[in-house]
Every structure is written in C-alpha cells, then in structure tokens.
Amino acid sequence: MEIQWRKSSKSSNAEGSDCLELAEHDGEILLRESDHPDVVVRTTRAKLRAFLGGAKEGEFDDLA
Image 1 (cartoon, one colour):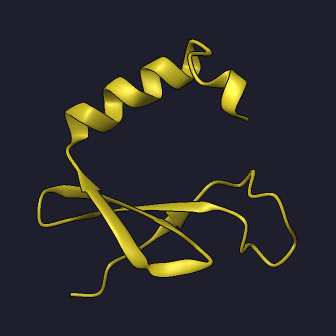
Image 2 (cartoon, rainbow, N blue to C red):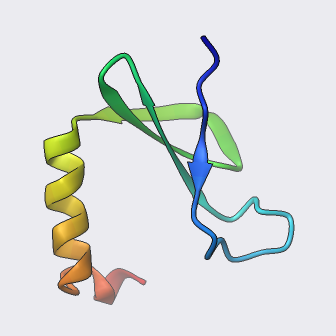
C-alpha cells in the first residue's frame, strides 16, 4: 500500500517544497519534510493532538 502524504494548503513556496507532510500508515502518524522525504518521524495520534493543541495556543510562535 502506497503512503498518501498530505501537506498544508499554506505551504510557503510555489513548488511546494517548503512544507511538512503528514500521513497515516499502520496506525502511526508519519511526518516528513518535502525536501528531505527519506527522513520520516513516526508518532501517535495522541502525541500529534497534544502538539497541535500547543501550536494552536501559540506555544511555539517564538520558533516561527
């Protein structure tokens, strides 16, 4: 089964190579950078949910 990567519509350049991509595979959430697709971080839905919650609350705004 081929992994179906998804990226945000807010990706920052016209080529779409300046973005993070997410996918679900075998019960895990996968994360990669579009310009380094061979490096994949694996996590769980719960951990991703906690991270996204913090991001929505501005916890990482100083890094952007």
